[in-house]
Image (cartoon, rainbow, N blue to C red):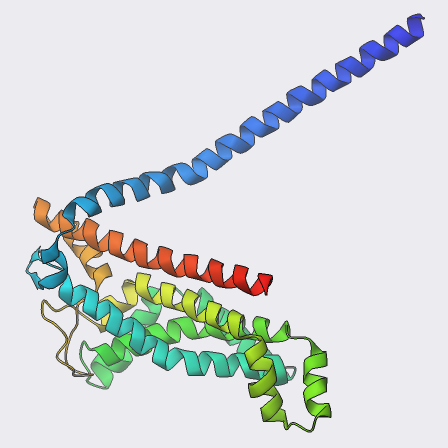
Length: 290
């Protein structure tokens, strides 16, 4: 009887110890989660509170006047730069991803992957300084949309290439073999069978690259400059406005109107990036369901 009682007491002690350790672990995890999301929620809350209060019709219909006015020129500039960068980067990045996935088992493929990883880890401000030396000064383009778009394209091409490669590698080899068995050529198999089968992954990579281009600041400071006016259609020798410049510069001004524009620009960038990420998640979920 005494042995049974001792075993019961021992089991109860072990269960109590495990419960205490488990609760301590849950508390530690909760504190860690709070430390991670606490600052994020604080930043989002501050930006949303001050940004919404600065929203008005004037904000979207007038251009910046010094540190006052609206953000029409900055919104247009961000759209033009991002669109230009995507037009340059998507064909190059997707093409590189196709090569890496289908033909990149050689030394050239390994070199491209290595250079892509190096470029991905390069600070964007270094890339901006490089573009300033090459495009702005050496080629004489000055601050311009073309210099900015090419710089952002260089920044996002590695992401497009690697995401495209991963997406294409997930297409089963049986689909390739079926295409060859039906007499399709190698380019036909790639562009009519493999690429359509991985289109969701390619589009996801493009959307993520777009989100990166919208949120960049450092490369544009060296290449796009700043302008209070709408884009005049010139590709070179014409600076252009963009939202991240407003965030970076106007928040340091002493007046409240500049701060309001900075918070409004920050909220716009945050909403655009959030919409892109939600779109990516919906696309991935829909693909899995299909």
